[in-house]
Image (cartoon, rainbow, N blue to C red; front, side):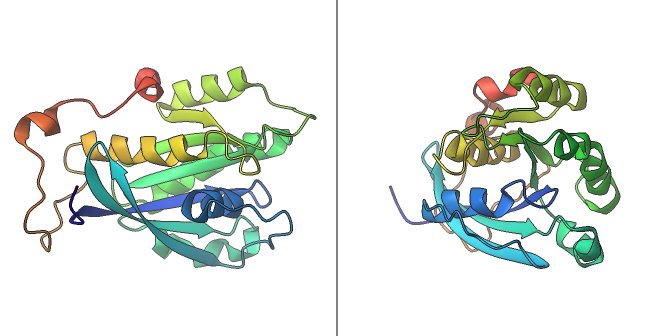
Length: 204
């Protein structure tokens, strides 16, 4: 496998404050968990190169603050994003109920109508659930998004969540362009036509 990067994808992580957005990003990018991680002020940003089905893709991951007072800082970061991960806390019903508002923000500020979306129910390691897996699944099915439950603390589901968003981006026509700086890596026409999705796409 070479070191060529096929493309760079911009992925947003959005949702209410305290649902674990920063912890999900830290777990995915650095495979680490910090129980005392501070709340994001404004916007945080990390990159990671991943290998998806034999090709390297660079992810530019933007973690946006969930607090209302920072909301005016975020619209510009929605621009040109190919994917979005909408996070709620399975132990706090109110964070699930706010998902509609976050989806509405994607509609308002997102510049790519075919953006890949993943709903993530985080903190499944906690015992005091308020939202069942079925609740999340039904919401995702209604809004035609991908869905998975995760624990940033134990890492369960985290890698799959990000990788399935990337696969959805890769299979969506017009959502991304081959990196012009890459001289050797390209997808064959037959590769582009085949589905990159696994069981996550059963909702679509």
